[in-house]
Each structure stands twice: as C-alpha cells, then as structure tokens.
Image (tube, rainbow, N blue to C red):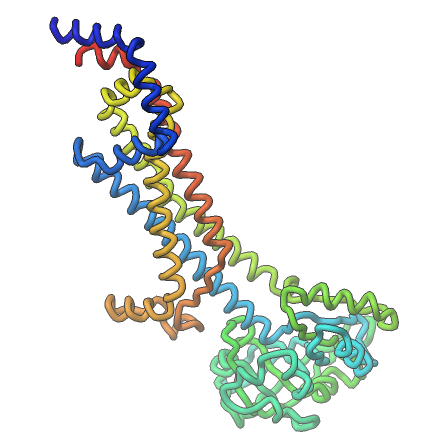
Length: 446
C-alpha cells in the first residue's frame, strides 16, 4: 500500500519535475547525445544478467566471423577466377579475327592489326579436329597449326612446355607438341611417333569422307593446367597443318594479344571498324570463347556469398535477442527515462545505438581479420595443412596445389555495407518494443 502511494505520488508529480529534468537532459545532449550516452552505459554496464552479456559477446563474434569468412571466400574465388583466366588465355589469346570462308592474305592482316594501337602481337592459326593414334589406342584431339615465333607473342604455350621448345616446330619437320594429359592417356613420350587422322569431305558438296593420314614425331609436352586443353590439344607448324588439311592455302584466323585483357574485345572491334579492306572477317574474343567457365565461377561466387551471409543473419538474430532481453531487463529504467522527459524517439535511439554499436564492432573486427587472412592465405594455408595433416588441394587431383587469393576493395566495401545495414535493421523491433513501454504501468508497483 505504501509503495503504491509513493509510486502514485511520483507519477502525479512527474509533470511538475519534467520541465527541469527534461531541460537537464537536453542540456547534456548538447555536449553528448542522450541516446549515445545511455546506449553506451547500457552496453558497458556489468550489472544485470550475465546471460545477456554472453549473448552480446556471441553476437559480436558471430558478426566478425561471418564478415571475415565472407571476405576470405570471395578473395579465394577471385583468385580462382584470375588463375583460370590466365591459364585459359595462355592458349586462346585475347581475341581472334576469323574468316569462315578461309583467310588467304593473312600476312597483310597481321601487319595491319599489329600496327593498331594497344595491340602487342598477332599470329595466324589453323585448327582442326583429328583422331590421334598411339600405343594405348585412339584419342580425339584438336590439332592447331601455328608459326612458333608469332605464336609466342599471343600465347603462353612456349612458357608452359615441360619438355622441348615451340621453336622445334619447323615447316616440313612433321613435329608435334602435345598436352601432358593427352600424352599420358595415349602412352606417348617425347621422340615417339603418333598417327593423325583428319576426316575431310571428298568433295565440296559433302557426301563421302576422304580421311587424311600423317605421321608426326612428338618433340615436346606442355601443361597449361586446364584439363580441357591439356587432354585434347596438339600443336604443329602452320605449313604442316595446311598440308594435313589438303593444301587449300587458307588459314582459319589470326589470334591477337592486346595491352588490356578487359579492353581487348573493344580494341579488336575498333580495329575492324577502321579496316574496311578486310570485309568478311569477324571478331571472336575471350569473353565469348570461355563464357561458360566464367559464368560458372560467378554463379559459385554468388551462391557462396549468399550461403555465408546466413552466418551474419544468425548474428543479427542474436542482436535482436540481446536487445529484447535488455529491454525486458531495463523496463524500469526506460520508464524512469520517460518520466524524466525522454520521448519515444529518444528511447528508440538508445537501443538502435546499442544494437548498431554491437554490429559495427563485430563488422570492424571481421573486416580487419578478413583482410589479414586474405592477404596471407599463401602462408596460412600450408600451416593449417601441416597442423591438420591434410591438403586442401592434392596435386594428384587438382592442377592448382595452393589456394589463390585476390582481395578486391569492392568486395570489402559491399560486404561491410551489407553487414552494417543488416545489423542496423536488426535493432528496429527491439527499439520499437522499448518505446512501447508505459511508465505508469511499470512504476506502479516499484
């Protein structure tokens, strides 16, 4: 009864004191915002439920781990994309100029395109499907005719040779360089002979097939690190490939290397628009030739980002749970703040500030940890492998034996922005619930 009368009197007297207390709070807010001050006090207070403090700590750790993991995974996926692009372009060059009817005057085309701005080199080629015969049987492959000194300007074949040299491919030498996986599958070693069968139509109208046979000596073995190339590709001199085709005197096209891989499609098309004498040719760039590879990597990167975002989502729910428990624990404090002149907006600001600070502290820790791990994957991965006794990428299963990592500033920015938005939105419900506290009902029995 006594406490009830005191509470009633306090409640009735609240309006009389509100002007002074409210003015005091507003005066303090000029030096430090009320929401920031009280939010920090609630966050740093050691009184109350230890479970709330534990959940707060778990929320910070959850956000940090989610952000760090997401940054590291995106960096590793970027590294894989760059590594795959470099390996694929080690064979396909940046762009190709193709004539579906066969190109005869290719020397003048090479001279024209190499004189264009931002073009580093150009090389003619002939590409045809063939059946290769070795000690272990038959295997399908793609035989490409090149001029060694020009091919070295547009591809990394010469640098990828494990045995031999691209310069060994001389006109009329009947020598061949093949991929390592293809050599293993056929049981071929350097110095061995293999037979190449190229199916050709007997006449221009089609119908009967007149296969052409030729014998080549394997003079080198290369390894690009891309299964689709190492298991089917073989290189011979351009003249030998032209004879294998039937002596038509034409080539398939010219490969082009530019100063900027991403600008290569536009550079090639700009050259074509300024070279009307080569009417009938078309441009085929690396983004079209390898579109499926990069589409798959981007899809995997997107899916990994979405899945790992669930970690951040769980941490955001922890923030919601933390703030709800704080609201329940601080109901009397909220009621007193309301009687002292704090508006609902001020109360909402207190809990938005508290929850946002939890999320942002976790995000900052996660960003620093993720950037550190991404920049040191090459040294940390071997240490983890030695500690746990296994390899992330065994050499007998993968061409890459170490995890590549490439940190992009935009990945860090968008990850950070997404986390800050998610954690800020997580504070809305608890803050509205705190603002809904009725001072009279809470203080009635205090």
